[in-house]
Image (cartoon, rainbow, N blue to C red; front, top):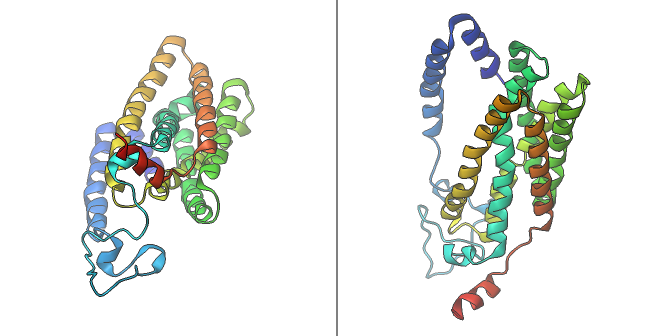
Length: 272
């Protein structure tokens, strides 16, 4: 919210090199010190999932560095045997395929629609400001309602905004675009929480890391695709249409995600 207009001002008045140095110094002075208080796990500071300590027996000893999972957890092998894992990986990859490219081309898309670069920077600020509320709101709702369904519903506003940008000349759609994208970005915490909901904590980091192969490839390809289409056609209409279709598929997949059965998976592995 703050950095986009600030760096926009610095770049427009002093050049991109000064902007890059400024951004780097801010990262060193803010981001690194902010990371120091982060702990290995909640148990390190005496916290447990949902605020409740796990049941203990006389023969159990707590290990704050590698806490024993309190829920039924999948191993990496068990998770990779489920359809749910690969469907979740594909769905998150499709969502990021679009949102990362839209973030990268946010201002160029608005400039293509006739907005100045300076105004585009302020709309980036509006987008960032909106994500504060959408991420907090989605987190609160995700603890109370079906996360997969929420993810599906919150993709719809960005589809509407992209279709509007592609086919409508109405000014309000330009201001709706950053808010709609913020709503879709708000489901990011729910996406990652679904990994824990479906497969537990034991192999969470590894399972998310494997997913990085999918969404890493997607986020590498999509900005290049968007840039190539613009250079070839002189506009973003085809990009917006393509991205709308991709998000529509992602929204459909989110609605059919279901919790995998660990018991069934163990039986399937035992038969191999």
